[in-house]
Image (cartoon, rainbow, N blue to C red):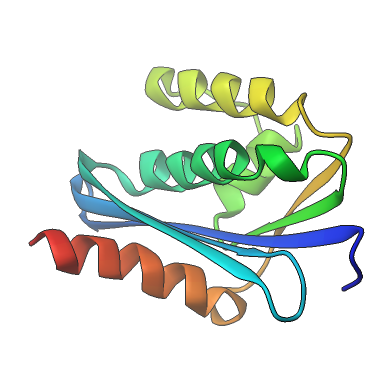
Length: 135
């Protein structure tokens, strides 16, 4: 990773579906500079939490809009819906999808990629910590 690129790892968690939920976002700006965001969301579904993590990441990274940004998620649903591979059918997810796509337009060079859960441990830890700290 060089100074012109940023990696962002996102995750949403829900205990019960719907249930207590939280998000975790890890923004890796350089090898030595990371930003962490964690937030309790209340009662939501896992998919709502995953989308909220993406939206929060995009809102938190507006100062990085001129950099090359790679967003990594373990949510196949979010990755495939945002990338246009899958259609969005659920009305609540549709509004979150539209908000995320609107925010994506603020960035010059951004990609969203699905990764296995094992490679998303930090964002997962933050999402679960947000729930644990609230409960």
